[in-house]
Image (cartoon, rainbow, N blue to C red; front, side, top):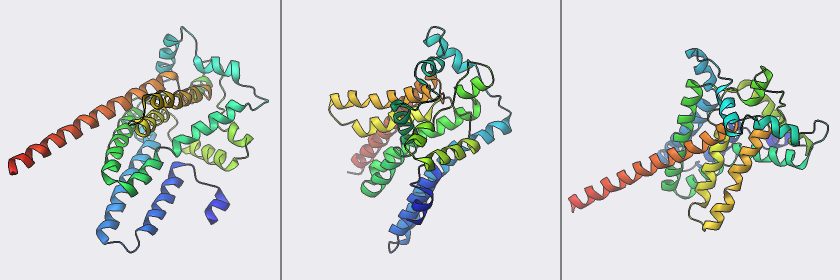
Length: 285
């Protein structure tokens, strides 16, 4: 409660993970030592993945990988017939002297990236370890492949490309919606994170990837019309990232393709494990 009053509700990944760990440590008091160690092992894997994601820039720098400014931009121009979609959206919707309703909506959509992927981790860990492992398996593969891409192909986001003269001027306006609705704590956390974390982790977009992944996970057994309507969320995330100049459209597309790839790999692996288990049980009988 003291931390919430002083710093606000945590929304950055590090703070969210710390709060979750503290909650689980308190909840594990009185349980067996094996249960406590399993909790620590399970969540240390998640924390390690998130830190690798955030600080992958350091590895890329050590390997001497150059930052790519034009590759994703050129692909966007091919998709949109020579137009930069980020520039087009800001020219038509961005008003420097006025915060519009879609600025606020976009900031809230952007913020879900730090909360939505973690929420199922908590719920499933408490309710169903088998489902938790399936979720973690896919999430870990998405993040691992993403981190490898960030290290081997550091790509500048649109706002950075514009700052270096590779596109027409763009404003990085991600936090203006939070300030407008007096969520200054969120804006400060985002500003602090933007200053120290990997700024060239644009390709693929894990914001887009996570929005699709969580959507698929939540609605995968729902009615078809619910699945179709739920597709609006990852599309809204892509539109937000493009408008805020945080990502190119192709970053989002590659993020979605990454989810499809990771999901299929995990499905095949799990099917193979299940088949081997069935075979072994038959042989024993």
